[in-house]
Image 1 (cartoon, rainbow, N blue to C red):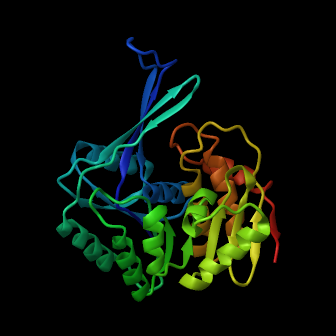
Image 2 (cartoon, rainbow, N blue to C red):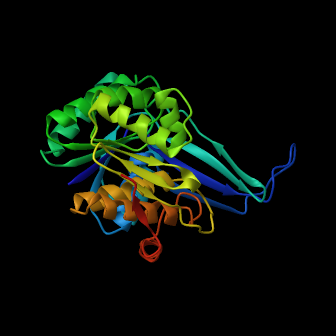
Image 3 (tube, helix red, strand yellow):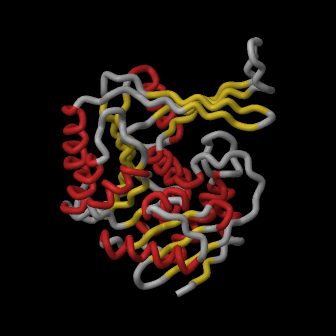
Length: 309
């Protein structure tokens, strides 16, 4: 079974307007809400691609209930950990000139609820299961929380995919996940320097793999493609050129495609093909609609995976 853990979920509210005018009434053309949070996005894509996962998330208040209703509508299975705090809402203003994102921090979560997270995982996760741990943490929760969660999951015999940034990524790596999925900016923050050439990227990635005993790193480069890097091999897949409506959720869609296919027994090469197609399909949809299975299947024919080493 695949589980996803989202500690800091949110509602993404897209407000479509013509333009922003200072000191004037701006009338919205359309308002659309999406359930959001990196782990939740992964579960949504897995569902869209025909797979099954269980999304574990901390939710609360009216926004939390709205999020659950939308997951119900999409057919995503979830296990909510109810908190008294209101689930945060991000505001995205979509104008003719571009997009403005206002990200809310969310409320502080009590220590007892953090213990409940571990208890829920203990009740659900079994040896051989796959857990995707991703995203930010609620206000007041130390990055080291991820260290303990990942270490515990590994002790239980789960395969762990980890996707976070900054101090959270560094802390989670101490718990020794099996895979991480940074984008290039996150990877450069992790290693503390910029890398540009293929040789530099592979060399630095393998240093991280050796230090933290990872199976592999999935490194996305935006419009420049993506790598699968392990000690045994390096795979590269080019970006497919498509009309871009929104890049939000592309990385989560990429990870979902890879996780689903690897869990189904696919090779690294085949899983990377699905990851590329899923991530690319996500940018073809507006807002955080994420990918459509029909688009993914069409794009698969265009995806090429090259073995570098």
